[in-house]
Picture 1 (cartoon, one colour):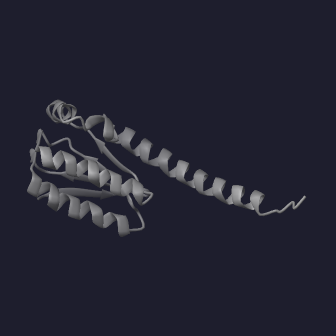
Picture 2 (picture 1 turned 90 degrees about the vertical axis):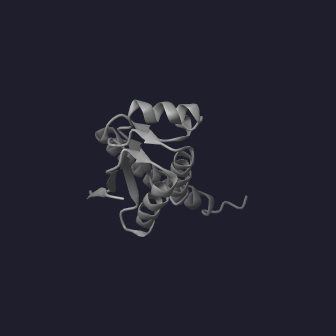
Picture 3 (picture 1 turned 90 degrees about the horizontal axis):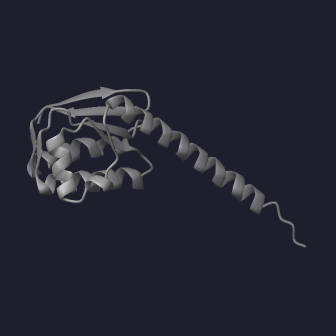
Length: 138
């Protein structure tokens, strides 16, 4: 599968150059995308602007891939999906499970907000632990 890869400071944009995401193409795409979880830049924006159809299994694979990213404290945002793909995801009741934005720019914003949120959550844990460890054995 041909993909365009554009690496930014906090994320990588991956744009498949295909009109249909079938199950076997999604396996290949998942393999490429999953590799980013081991990189310094773990966040991925998947731009589906060229994709006009998606198989059932491929759609489910994308949901699982997104879950893997969030479980490893990384963002996975899908953007620029065509109406036919959106309708298919809605039909499969997967649309609400996915982090989808209309534009690539909005996907970038989501990634950056989630990065800030993770940093704040990490800092809150440190502050909370410090408060709890100060003692006070009354």
